[in-house]
Length: 203
Length: 94
Picture 1: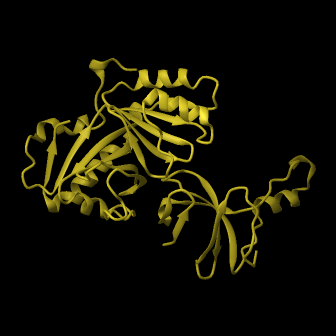
Picture 2: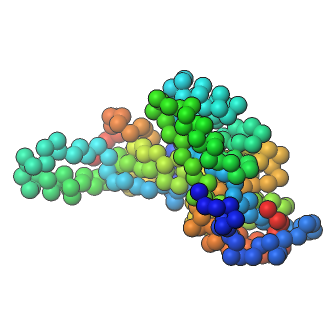
């Protein structure tokens, strides 16, 4: 793990801090980078009761087993990525201890927990035009009836692979994007959202 | 653009998927014991039917799982979606 004082967010070169405002005003699209959110990849067999029980004991809540759903505790959010694959997002950046605890809890089981913190960054998208902007480059049906609050989906956004998480209440979307696509996706969002007015919030 | 019903994620657009070519082509168990012609047949020869074709598809940007799709090559109608390893049933052609 890099020294904390050396750690730089994926989008640091864009100077977002200098553009950050406290009040987005009437901007249609509000963007922020949620840098340094801890992430842990989890693989295991959902038919294995011991695996599910061990993970639930460690997290304090059960893993989501239905496709494209999310479960969450106070500091950890679990995303369904595949029938035997989950992503855990950890607030604050404390992914490593959680991964180590999971590895210990899953000892002897056919399962894996891997620190993926720096593999992706998270771009927070909100504002009244958020869904309209995403609809420009995403094949998903983003209407609230098809993509309700509290769900997640992996799809394409402007040709980049993203995991989209619509928070409970539906006011904010988080885009989990591979770090090498993050600069492209941020610029794509700025281009797509220009007509609605853009505000940048601090982390 | 096809709309493909991923067995896990439900209907999604074709550009979320990758096609892995024709399904149910078994790799020869002993490649060194067969002739070059038989190996070439395994590697290159496909049925290329006009009608129902079984294909492998992967939901690449979604759940990243492989599955089989039976598709009509004339109308692009998706006839059936079934699990990897399941036998091909129903449908004509191929």
